[in-house]
Structures are given as structure tokens and as C-alpha cells.
Length: 307
Length: 263
Image (cartoon, rainbow over all chains, first blue to last red; front, side):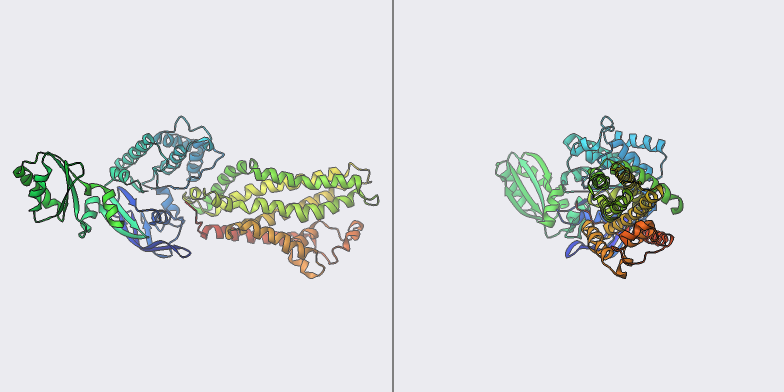
């Protein structure tokens, strides 16, 4: 499978402020979450990907094109920017339709496609209202609608879940999954980590303009050998279980939870831990109620990496 | 679609998109207010100026010093500097720039929309000024030829100043300050200082276009502009060349420039 985005040694500055340091990354088709703390360079990377900015250093190809001002790329790409800006004198429908017309569609076809896009983002009822009367969430969905209206094969969305209420968030997440099922790729940035995690396993972690880690949450986790994996277990006899687990060679530490019913285990090898855990739990007659790995949480990985 | 076809199509669509926005904006209301100034002054002058000033003379004075030297540059700068800069400032420029259109079409389409409004206001201002001087009992009103020449020169000024302002707006962050600085510090100063430095100004060329140097009316104004003017056709040609250069430069600038938008 060929990469949809290939960046090599990408650098971009704003005066003395580094937006992107030396970013080398390759993004495969599918849904990819671009994650990092504020100021990490996510938005700058997205702006370079869509050709809003040119890199000062390095090279980037998106769908095989150099992005800056690339008309062939813009036929295949949809961009949902983070900034809350729309043409205020227009209705949502007019906004999406006119941008489609700029893309070369006839008025009739653009109207049809805009209507479909507004329906997909759940704005059919409000599409003939002025965007200046829209709520923040509706404005966000309008921006999203213009990015998907021309049925691009790659949608790049900068913080698309910001400002959405829980129902709208679920709708948008479902929309991205739907796009993925249609064979389209989505790259979205977010600092709402659990939402990214619920949408995709493929993440790109950026920090200070550099690639920190890339892959699935577990892949990324394995890259950090110096940080142990954490597993949380609740049991009827947590002390007995803790005593048994201390003997395991790959267990680094065990601590009792404040609730008196749980223990937290730190292990160097989570796969091996899961193999031997059952036997240890049975021999301790611990009455295990639940087992969860914090390492499946992107939040935990992120905290380890940037914390 | 080839650039040759895509450019006029996208330009037209952007023109249509923005003409309504411009006409309905608060800036346009201010521009209308500005355009009312010359007719108002013409009306006042025709009623209260000393008796030896005829209607045509009042019209020429108001047309030269108020319309062409103040209102035209002010209006053109106010509406021209934001041609692309407004879109960058409101951060909507991302939308047209991520569409498969030649970026130059944004400059062309938006400038055409702005210049439509500017020229309409200038023409209305010029014609209303001519009507206003008829109100007072000042003898023969300005002939159609005088009105046409003055209004035409003012409109050419609108084209040149708005293009220059639009280019400044693309290149400079505080475009309005630069553009106003140019038209009122550089242009106004040079155009009114005796000597050949006047020839460097747009004002000089505009005056050349509507002034009949042999005419007796001009003789009374000649003391103010003690410099020979250009042939009207030459002046017009020079202004058109300047406009074409600015237009091409603006298109290239907007195609190559990166607009760093705050998130």
C-alpha cells in the first residue's frame, strides 16, 4: 500500500518559533489520528499538507503531489480547517455549494452535492439559515461538509471535534468511519485523545514539531522500553494476588489501590504477563473481577511520551 | 480544466460571491458617505462661494481637489486594500485556496468586485457634483464634455489606486497604513509641489486626462499646477500600462504568497 502522505525532514518556522522541527513521517491510507499537545505542530503540519504553507526545509508529497497550490491535489483532497471562519453573509448551503462550484461543478450538481454533504453532517434542517446564526458546533459541521462535499479521497480535518456537543461528536465520528468504509482516507488532529482512539488505532504523535512515535497504540507502546506497561486488576483478594505476582520475572512493581480491591501492576513485557497471569491468579485464589490495561489507552501512551 | 479556462470561470464565480458581500458591508456604507462629500461641497460652493466663480469653475475645483485628489484615492484605498487582505484577515482564504482554482482568480475576482463598487460610487459622485452646481445661480453649468472627462479621469484613478492598494494589501501586513501613507503623504505632496516631481504621481496623469490646457477655464487653475501636462491619450495609456503591470504583479504575488493564518 503506498503512503498518502510522505514527509521527509520537514521544517517550518514562524520567525523564531519552530512550527515543525525535522519531521519525517509516512502516513498510510485509512484513518490516522494526529496527536500532540498544544503547540506540537499538528496544525502547521496540516497546513503544509494542504498547501496553505510551504515548508522551509524538507519535502512533502500528498497523494503524490507537492501540495502548495497544486490544483490536481485539491480535486482529491478535502480540508476542514480549525479556524472558525465562514462567509458570514451566506447560508450553510450556499457556502458549501459555492465552494463546490469553484471546484468546477455546475450549479445544479453543486446544489445536489451540497445538500447531500449537509445531510451527512446533520445540518439539513438548518442549511438554509445564515451561517452567522449558526452555533459553534453547526459552524464546525459546515466546515466539515465543505471538506467532504466533493467526495475527496483524502479528508484532512484539523481538530474537527472541537466545539461539538456529544451527539454531534458521535455523528462526526460515525461520518469518518463511514468515509473509511467507502475507501477514503482521513487524517484528523485532536487533543481529545480518547476520541481519536475510539476512531482509529493508527496514530502519529508529534511533539515540538518532531515525530515522537507512530503506529498503533500498542506499537507505540512497545517503542518505549524504558516505560513499563500498566495493568489494573480488581480482585476479591488483591493482597494474595499481589504477593504471587511479585514472583513473576517480568513484573517490575505491584501497588495496592486505595479502594482496597485493586492492584496496579507494572510489567516490562505485557504479552508475557498475560500468559502467566491466569496461573498466578488461580493459584492465589484471588477471585479476579476485572483486568484492564492502561496501555491500551492513548492517553497513557501520550502521557508517557510527552510527560 | 486548463488554466486558460479555469481562470475566467473561477474569477467570475469569485466576483459573484464577493460583489454582494462588498455592497452589503459596513465599509461600503462609509464609502457611500465619502462619495457624497463632493456633491455636498459642490452644492455649498455654488450657493456660498464668491460671485466671480462660475458653475463650471466650481465643478472643476471640486472635481480636482475633492473628488480626484481626496475621494478617489481614499475610496480606492479603503476598498482596494482589503481585496485579498480581508480574506486573509477573516481566515476564509483557506477555502478558495484549497480548491482546484488558479490562485490568481481570487485577486482578479475580488478586485473586480471591489472596483465595480468603487467606479459606481466615483461616477455617481462626479455626476451628482455636476448636478449640484446647477442649483446655484452661477451661469452656464459644466458641459457634458467637461463632466465626462472629469468623471472618466476619476474612474481611471479609481482603477489605478485600487489596484495599487490591492497589491499593497497582498504584500504588507498593515496594508491600509502603507496605502494611505502613499496616497496622502507621497502622492498628495508630490502632486502639489511645483516642479517636475509631479510627473511621478498618478494625480498628474489624471489631471492630464481631463484638463484642456488651452481652455480659459484651466488658465485660472494653472497657477496651482505650473507644469505642462501630458497629452490626454498619452496619460491614459500610461495609466493603463501601470494598471496592467499592477494587475499581473498582484496575480503573481497572490499565487506565490503564503498566508499565515492564526488558528
